[in-house]
Length: 250
Length: 251
Image (cartoon, rainbow over all chains, first blue to last red; front, side, top):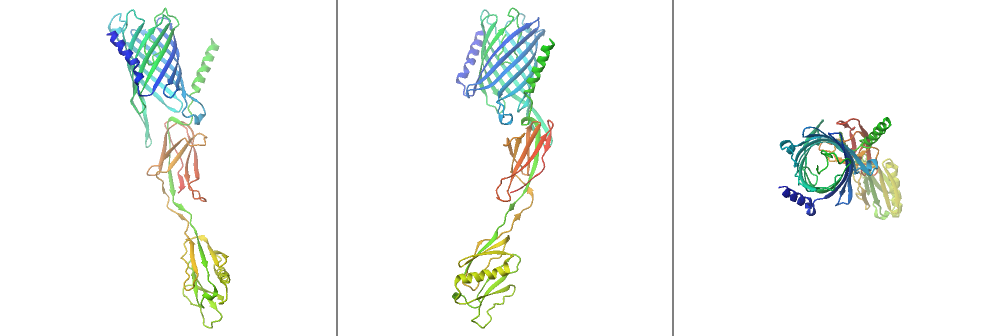
């Protein structure tokens, strides 16, 4: 079963080679640090490259905190600063526009709760995010993700797949006479499959591909994600960190 | 440690300051207004060209007529002293002006005498010039004038330009009129919208800040839509509606 999931993940991973939609490449690097028994910290940088238009789509710096002191539930907090090409440079004569995003959430390790000593992972994560962006409306989003990651005993690599749903509370905004109407709506389904490879205790690589299925007028697209993670204190076992990345490992 | 905290606080402030909202899209406020206008057109002054003949082609008592917008009309009749009878056609409803001539008068002489006669009575209504055997009359005002006529003379009297008065129509809501929005102090418009059926327009999803709204109107001199009517307006709160003053245009 694990081999089948791994095979599917591999297929999914390279499916973008035949994609007709726009294609982005996300590359990231992060450092993880475990403090005490329950606290995990992580900070990282990410670059998003538009392979079709050959331009930087976004660059970001993020920090994450995970607290695992409640049974099989981790509490999460995240901050991200990002910058992207300014489409309204005629207003402020700046090449880049920036955004700030904060998020809180929780992740429940379902299999570890139901099966004692399970190494396989079936995790449900919910995140509440608020982002303020120059020249764009603020976003208030609820994310829900289901991640499946079987453990291949003795193997350095492990596959994973996930499905994530995005709901924006203020998706639509318009005026009727003197009243401002704000409506929420589903924004995106994000399907991800990939492989995590543990180089050694400190270093880990992850390759995945995602398909962003937008529920509005935005064009759907594939993206490939290459992630490098450095574990500062590898002797300590880390909980899940960097919760907002499209891939999930650990 | 205290210094580190201070540095972190400054860094955090700078980070958040870099995302400060400014006038432009991405907000929740609205600017709306109303455009009304009237149809205006600049009139024309009447222009008349009179080509006269030689004196030998005129008969004692021949006459032509010229009119005015105020209804005080004239007939100009030719009086040849060689004839003892009265050549005045004595038209009622018009004032008569006699022009003395002889059969030997050249066409240029006739043209001069015609111009002098017209100038004597109609200098308030027409300005006149002469070139050879042609007399050119140009009305002083933009108004409709009944056409002149050569009646019994062999003159050629043409209306080169028909007179018409200036026109200003009723003030009505302007539908489908384009309205432009400039963010901040910019020179070029960033957004545009068209007025609806009742002349109203709106720009929404705007940030707090200063804006300029303008519409184009007809220029009174050139008659082209080159006159800009602009208003400066400020949005001072989120989720607010800011109204412009009514735009009044000519088209």
